[in-house]
Length: 185
Image (cartoon, one colour):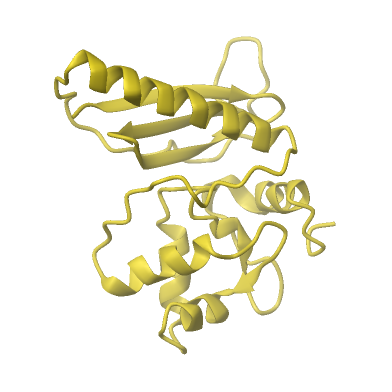
């Protein structure tokens, strides 16, 4: 199977990227303003996103068409999400191969947190079967490669919003406001 990489532009958000293989999302970079001539990118994250590299493998044309249909529909759903529509993404197949069973449990638990709701890092750890592992849950969120599909923006600290990596708290607040989360409004 081939890894399909596609970039998409969400109005008012920037350019996001997806890596998909055989109908499974391997990686998703949330949209942010990318350096484009003539555009202000002063609010861009301080780091360049990392992504799965590797060569493309050849596939048969029918498999490529099915993959293209999946990716096209997925991009349409993402664009609708960023336009403010209530679009669910928990049904999208994602690659949950992590180093430990705890991280897989974190991902599965987080996919169950409804749009517009939040959990604390401690609550996420408990939902993943490891109460007291709040710091490990925070590490999981910091390393999340499946933004929106494993919605780490819905995880907050016990005392406030917490952090959101190189995208920053303003981006996290904006995602939560888009989902009509009272914490961000």
